[in-house]
Length: 633
Image (cartoon, rainbow, N blue to C red; front, side, top):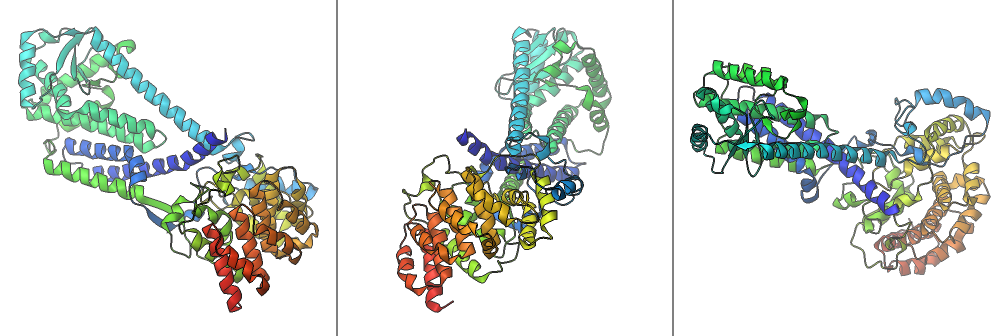
């Protein structure tokens, strides 16, 4: 179950990126096609096809293409799904909190201005909304694909029940048109009682499907019908239609995908109309023929309708009006695609797909972005995963600002900088064991639907209490969009604010350090690190955090060690010196930070030893601590 959730957690942001970038590509194509109103239908069809193929190829471009990181307004853009409902919350005690929930739920949301009727509140506790939406997308994609496969099967069955056309004059006419259109493949002509209008079907073995008695039609009408259907074969329209349907099914949540397929199909029919007119057919009789075919289709039994198959019908009634207007418009160009136009479209489509796929929207930061940053959260055992602990201060700083405490910023930046370098073998590190706590999101606690309401109510109470500064910091982090799958900052902030009691945060949080669930204790340790020296107001905090250093789960030990390093309690010295030899590098990094902040030069030998640690994050933190202590900083 844990592995399945991890796979889905990784698939959700990837899918979101595909949908958004697919939307951008198709919007660009729509704008470009809008400038080609007087161009040939073949060119417009090719433009839509190129855009649809680009959308379908996005997964390949995302994996193999270059990456360009864009620092912009990502911090203010909420992700499509919030995880703020994931804290284990109990109703806030005290009438002061309870009385404010109703008014706050009407005036606050995950982001200011969003009502409390958010996505989170629509689902019961324990449901990960992101995973649920992924399942909805998957069900929709499978359903649409199944429908298209069913239509293809029905078309095959209609063809299988049809009779091969034997009339010699029909075959001679079809052969002449094939030669004129330069069709090298054999094309099967069949007739059926189940259809009332002509259609084309088949990607590899094209079939022209005619209604029974087509051989007795006037030769002009038969010539026109065969010219239109064989134009589909020459243009390989069945193939491009299948590609378009595949892209639409994958991007069915994208409204532009539906629009693109519809527009591409319209331009496909208009391009075939142009081919017919180029062969000398006059517009008036051709328009009359299309109207007659469309009229027959309207009276066709639904069970036998071409609309229920994958065949390309000659005159679908819904798109007929614009085709008739185009047929009589003398200003339109009616030529096919030239080789230069094909090359230009292919080049532009490839360039646009690669460029848009390469963009990575990130929160702005004061430091330049390293390519390694993109790997955050993908591999919890990799060196960049040290950002989960070693770079906590920088990760929580507002965009474009540095942490206010110079010593915290110094030690953190050094750990981050060296954590991005290739690390040595870490076979003994616990985060490489692929057990139940290997994934960063294993720290998440159980879910409550009303977590955000309780958090906002708690903030209103705490803002006037002794922990007002901490409350303000936690409230600001409620609106913080997760930057990677292991980013639990907003959830922890909501959890802490929901526990406000009598205007205080620290005391009720310290109570949770004795909780039987290690995840809850880890949340409490994180909050106390945020509180810093203020946590010492409750004398129980240090002892409970020291006790957590002996817990078998390394994630709790790491949180406790970071909290003690942030509090800087001298009485934790012995326990933190023992933590220098912890099996988890995350704990050792926190212990190094604690020793560095003590400023005790007698501990330099310990730092020198850790400067040779097996993990690069520990080596980097120890090296910077040595430099700071030796220079007296």
